[in-house]
Amino acid sequence: MSKVSVYVDNVFAALPDTDEALQMKREITASMEEQYEAALAGGASEDAALGRAVSQFGSVEELREALGCEKEAAPSQRPTQEDRAFAVQWVGEYMAFK
Image (tube, rainbow, N blue to C red; front, side, top):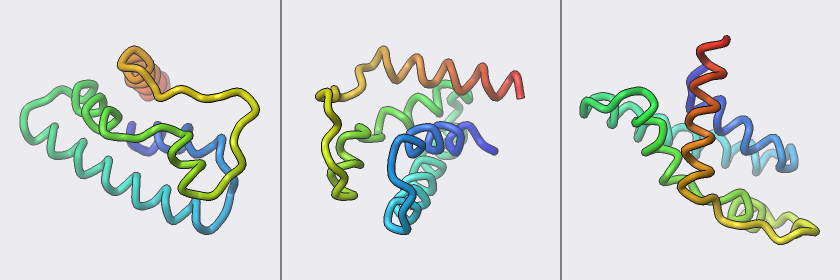
């Protein structure tokens, strides 16, 4: 399983398990994989490539809205650059552990 797949799986874990969500997950994974591979081909490290792909990703709230899910009780915030850096680091550590 790629770093991109792990990241997307974790994001979608909080969303309903519907056919529409599964299709969106596939499309997002494919798009992020393309961005990741392009960054690697351009000479970026794996972590930098993942960071670039993640930075193009929207928020979970945007996904919830696109899927027509109810709003969360607490208002969510768009991920900050620090949140994205943490996600990249976490995925890297997880993949190294795995």
